[in-house]
Each structure stands twice: as C-alpha cells, then as structure tokens.
Image (cartoon, rainbow, N blue to C red):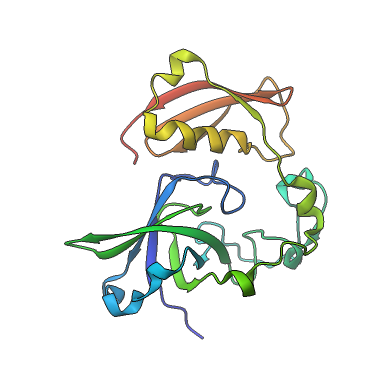
Length: 227
C-alpha cells in the first residue's frame, strides 16, 4: 500500500526539542493545510460537527535504516528498554504517528482553500499528514482502561519561573503556550544536570532554561525570524 500525503501541519514547533510528548498538553494552535489535490470542500463537509479529530501522520524527521524491537522511553529515564509496540516512540517500522486534536475552527483562504485550525498537536511544523478521522467519544474513550507505565507519569509538571526581564519580551498571546511547554519539561529524562542550560526553539523564539528542585527557570530568550 502506498500512502499519499493529504495535508501538512503548520505551527510554532520548529525543532524536535520542545515538542510536547503527548497530544493535548499544549494549547498552541496548529493549522492543517491540505495539499492542492484535496482542497475540496466536499472532502471536509460535516467535519465541523466533531469537536476532536484523529490525525495519522509521519515521523518524517526520525527515520532510521534499522529496526529495533525495543526503545528507551525518555520518561523512564532513558535507560529502561521496553518493546517498541508498548510505546509511542517515533522509531517504528512504518514511522506512523497518531494524534488527537481539538478542532477550533475552519479558515477560508484565497490561496490554500479551507484550513483546519486545531489545538493540542504534538507534531513538528511541516509534518506530512496521511489521514484525518473524527474522534467519536462513545467508541474512542475508555477512561478506566489501564495506562501501563505511562500512567505513572500522568500529571507530571514543573513549576515555571520566568524573570520579569524576559517575560516582557514574550508576546501576550505566546506566554501561556511557552509556560505549558516549559511545565511539561522538554528535557530527556536521563539529562538531569541542574547547572546545565538547555535550549529549544518555538515560533521565532530561542529559549534557554535550567531545572532544579522541581522548578524550571527561563534563563535566556531571543527573538528572530525563524517562524
């Protein structure tokens, strides 16, 4: 079977470091822009009736030439190996990702047709999307199901500190999103050096932070023209 790209996602996650590890952890808005062949109103007729959507997409920046049956999930410290099919690791035989997003609107554009506006994506900017399906609560939600080792990490969050001098450099519409990204702790879990300054990019921001005592402190912020 050959997969055809139907759309690409546009958002502020311009580097892999800093992307939320699961969907729904950040309220940042993403745009789903259809490829020219699929910019047809009939293809999304009725989609506005659904609050949430499933996206099937490609881990396009995580490909490897060899298959490994086990991986080391970052949230388990990066040392414990588990089976790849017991994780959501990007290093998979077919590099397919699955994400649930919230549909917040449809933007009509003169040059790119109807663009879907969604929140909660954990996907790198420019990622190819292979399919979109409606999320159906009665069939797709099992709140009492066991969550395995991932359940141990539920609710994990760091206290965020942003010095006033850096806070004033952040646009008001971006402050909440940056706080969410920092709170979720962008570091790989096996990196735990309180003296180290870690860096990542979001939209046109270059951010540096350090972590100590359950708190994450923004130590550097620069703005450029990357997004």
